[in-house]
Length: 237
Image 1 (tube, rainbow, N blue to C red):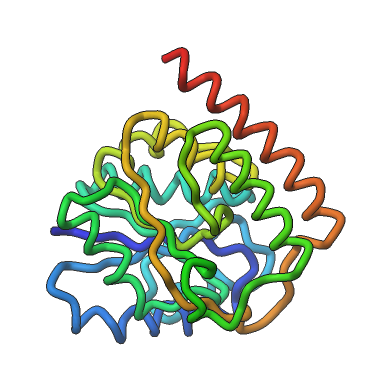
Image 2: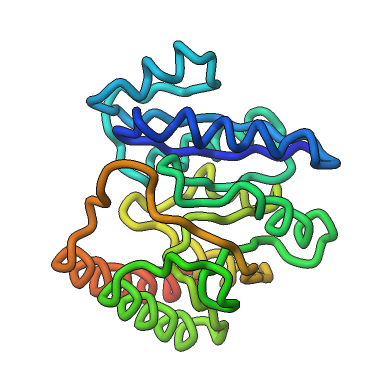
């Protein structure tokens, strides 16, 4: 069983080494092969230099493609190198590597095709995001319930794992902007089970999120529309 952790990184020079070292710490306690790849998404800081200086496996994108393009690059790499499971994992230190096994095991056991690390199904994560973003997440959860009949509470979680079939889907079809909610619609509409798994998340180690309150409102509206459109498209396939 080969598992790949995809780490999209844009201007994460202060965080990326710690993120990768935390992954190295947990690898020896797993009963499957775990690799990771950093996708340097055209960073303007020293993210690439940190990766090269510390011999971290990295794919360097010359131009910034955005989160969707960076993550899809990781899925293409996973497909090409015949990985059985791929995990998305933020480069800013928010995701807790010790919960990777919790995400992977339901897929290894063929229970589901996709798992989503969730802050909201159990109260084990002190970090919940801002109030306005939590409201937006609730709206997206409602849109998902309406369009698919499935309830997922942490719709924007970037801490996710998928099986080989879904790696193949995402390698060829992955939205560019704020892709997490839309791709959940895709997976469900194509007949795969999605399971929320309780995880702990943290404040980012250094730097600030680029998503402001105004952007959160825009995000909610844009992604809600994208989810509805995706639901219609998948229904017609």
